[in-house]
Length: 443
Image (cartoon, rainbow, N blue to C red; front, side, top):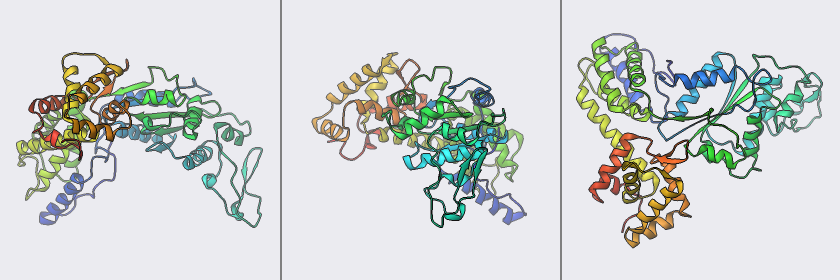
């Protein structure tokens, strides 16, 4: 396990000054937001080991085409996982390039420039659109020089594919320790056009034809289909890794380590208190990474509100209730982001609760039937919000309301969300989830 993110300052001093410094640290943690990395990364050991093993044996010393796809519902911890993999690779000396979203066309040249700098010894400013005259470059056998001065701005050499990077090495063989890894998050948003520049980038990195580079993608459960539409059709099931809940033991270990991490920075608390708090937080979160973070946020809020923050004297029951409220808010937001009312979302989950195994077409049929049963005004509002009926399921996937398993069948990825939807569906339109629908979704 390792700490991540920007750490709060160390707690120094005594008495009131020490207490205020501790409170400031706890407030910083409570306000860090849902996109912040966990204080301590836990679990996913086999996935991390797999990624490191593949990255250690890249072509020409290992097999080609070993792209990794990590996919799952929102809140499954995909972004935190790829960042942890990147950190461990960097410690081993690998070059990592992190893309938090599909790179825009203008960004792709700089990705190749970064790879050229790392793998071919080229200058790092090759990604610029122009270079000053006193930094103009000439490419010649054996590497990159800077002996051309023209008196004006010049365009850098074009780096548009792995071949252009390999050519900079002028035939020098790759060494086993020369390797780079490119991470692309939100890969489900890749353009379906196989001729789009970002699609060509992904295919070139996947092929691993001329440079020792590994492509690691992360995204929602429909990411494999999205990559297929972009022309990357041979991923294979071995490297398509679904991400779900942590095991209870992983969650408990992570909770204990996180509390210990803060305790080492000045939070008073006995070992027994750490065990008690970690056990309740782990059980309440059901191993879902976003829920785990919600309960920790509630923990930091409770402790920061104490006169003298300490685990042994803090109100654990009140903290869990605060975490429960955060979890419910998270569920309501997920439903709201889908753009579909609880009557539609609930009808689909009711089918799943009955053990129905629904493929994409069957799921879309359930959704269509549920919409047809709504009042006319709601139907018009929904159909005005979506361009086509196919977009209904896509919206549920993006919101994490449902996910696709390896057989392309609909499943409920978050057990607590599934239970919440069924409960709210049973209450009808008076429920908080129904009230959370976007404007115009009800008559």
